[in-house]
Image (cartoon, rainbow over all chains, first blue to last red; front, side):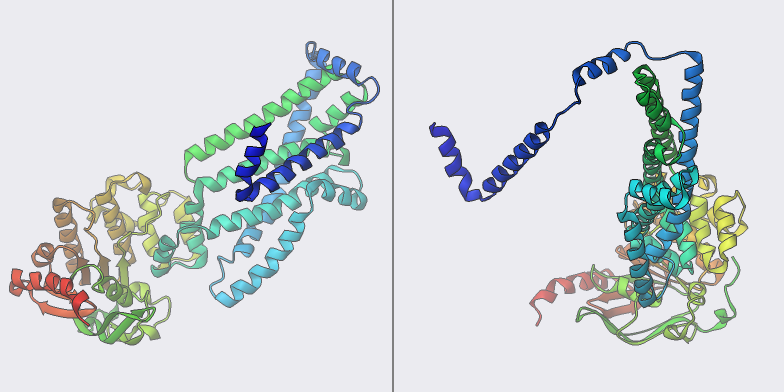
Length: 268
Length: 260
């Protein structure tokens, strides 16, 4: 019994230990709070057994695999469409947010603060919430889904891209400027190459996120993997869920590979 | 490279009149008077902190003097339009400030950005277009074979030559270089300075180069200026620079802390 008291005595001067203890208690309480609710519905164990059992006999029939392939392509297509919107919003946004094209300092500060606030607002709303809002306005259709992903992603791209364009070494840029380079020329000959492979890597990471978001947002009228999973679950055909999840995994890994390939190619 | 402008006929490539520069209240240079005839090759020697970089940056228009005037081809630098400066003076900084991710070709071409519009610049970046002045400059410094290589993959000596080629494409009347051979071995240093001299002579360019090594200054330049604590200590033709002179330049610095 002496050991715990010793710990107390030693820990007390640090002052942080009390906080740590409170955090541990809070964590324990939060776990208990969740655990208090039923983890699974009635017959949850039976359902879990069924889901796991289905893992051993996934539906690999040719017609279904065809459906999986189509769903995968559709999800990929929606992700590409969403990224296109994101880039269309994000690239001009990045130029505006960073103010790299404005020579005069006062004008730059003014424009930057206004645009930054605007994009922060768009970004603050998660793509799921955008989807719900657009569902009301546009009804369930693929365009609503693509915009729901593309808009907040565009705002995020604007911020991150804008920061990357600003956080490049200043001296090489100054050298270009003193050789007579305009802000636009400096963007292409200095900022973009200096931000470089890093930038491409980030955009691919966003693309990966868009793939997952496109799979999730099936309820708004985006067909594809998410929609097929939804149907399979509703029909309790778990053996169909696994091939669909595998397809999603393949898609995400493919994007990752593409990203690595592009980054290793070096220049953007 | 052709002679840059009609101003090339002006007797003085650059001139400083009572120029003073200070950083955060600490004087770094001057008051300093200096006249460099067009086409002359001047070496600035002196210990670190003597004001060599400040002088070069002031002539390049990158540093506004606290007082006094800087004249390029007889024109006050503070009255120039932005687009005029690149043709009058160009500085090769000690860090070179190249873009490592771009090829040698694109780095060399970027010297022409002041004369190009955006469309031309983009075409030159994205399409495999030949820009004859860039190739000529690369050939002049012996880099023609390396044009497609990424700058990040080059050696120190090659980097120096890329920076020089970029400056040749920019084609300023006054070429300024801050410690261009500090990171090179003696053979390569000789080589680069010889190249700078030759390209300067061909274009009728005025050359001002800061150096750590007095030997190189004496060997390659028309005029050697010793700087210490922001002042000119001596200003001599190379034949009259004696070892004693140089020694005094560096020894004087050691006495500085004891002076009031």
